[in-house]
Image (cartoon, rainbow, N blue to C red):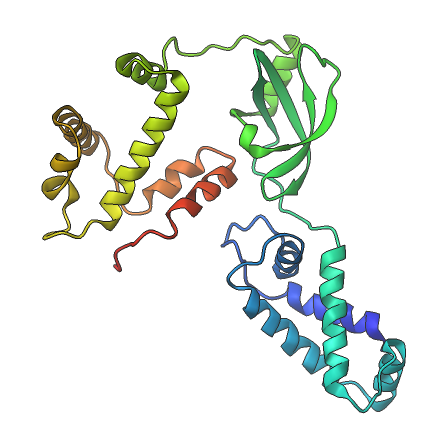
Length: 289
């Protein structure tokens, strides 16, 4: 038994831990990959739990070493064999260093092709490998690069995912720039109605919807009914009227139950972009139910 074998055994035990830092649909393969991601990027609020687990595994392995193996390991690490605590500390540092050095393995995305726009040009991408939580290496095709160009991009650029059949059809058509799009989008209508730019309409609409979402979550009041008790004070008459109209029409058309949002967003990959947005609501004052 040497230091390398101890680290290999520790990593094997860590990989077997049935825990996912990012949830059941974690983009990381196992607990060791999650440790590597935290060491190389940002520590999570569960980092101490992972440290405690690594400590316990190393302590158990180190304490089970025979006298001969302890002498070998201590000699490798240039430590006195009679100091087991120092031995465990150095092995832990070696384990963290290995986590920092190893390449992170990610679970593949649930799609293989997508498209996005650069100016007025449509780019068609085929994923080579996932390289991060929200990054991937691709081959990108377009009218300007019909034979493809390799590169790494963020999933935030994705406008539409594609099936392999749709991708092949675009290739047969010579990577067309024109796509069928609605003549007028919702944001276009808001921009015209409010006499503002499209970008201002988008930003104002997103801010309003986010604020309404938060009000519905955090409002307590007398009966905890934001729409009935407070909305008519905060919104204009026109805004309040159309909000109630939207809510009424929604209730007629949809049978909406708790957690339905996950089902709907799950139909619109990549799910990573929705996870990123979900971070905005984590600090809200949610009701305990």
